[in-house]
Amino acid sequence: MINKQIIQRLSDLHNVLYFCSEQQKYGRIYVFTSAERICINQERGSLLSQINLSNRSDEIRYYQITPALEAKVKLTLHKVDQTTWAHLIPNPFND
Image 1 (cartoon, rainbow, N blue to C red):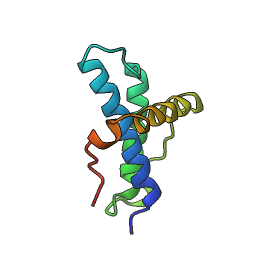
Image 2: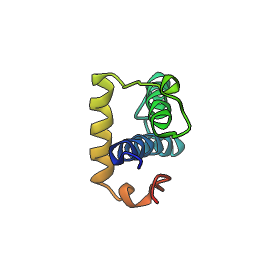
Image 3: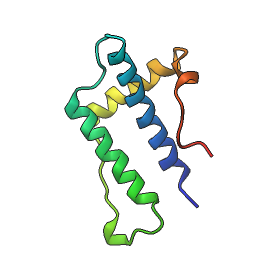
């Protein structure tokens, strides 16, 4: 069984990146820098390696974003939840 916490974390990271991309698309100030986006995607890759059932234990990667970036992610998630964005973001991790 896939860990629900990992699925939720993947969903949250997906949502903040989607929100940031949409902000840029409409000419608004971006939420995350390119380097921050890379770090977020590194964690996403790490989480995907953890739920990949065909990975051997030595193939699993562990990476977490920095506490400062985590605070920014949480703030962005709060913004998303406070707007209509929460219902507009497609979640690829729903069953």
